[in-house]
Amino acid sequence: MEWVDQRTLKISKRLNELDKLLLRFVRILEKYFEYVVTSSYVAILFGRARATEDTDFLVKDVDEEKFKEF
Image (cartoon, rainbow, N blue to C red; front, side, top):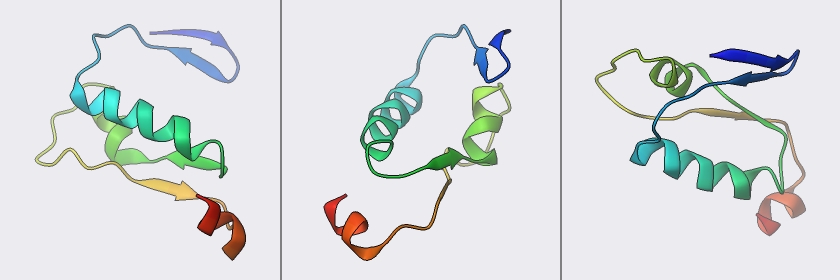
């Protein structure tokens, strides 16, 4: 791992299926919402073994129209 700048951490690892799914999903999500990926996936990303491979997100409050568009 290395910091590219104050907001970007570069992690070199071979992407697994969960990583690929997450990346596909956030490419869609970021078109509509401000979001953050929370601790469950972050723990997996940094190599911690977990019983489940769930991924949680926090999404900034949006209006109903924006949600329907999503």
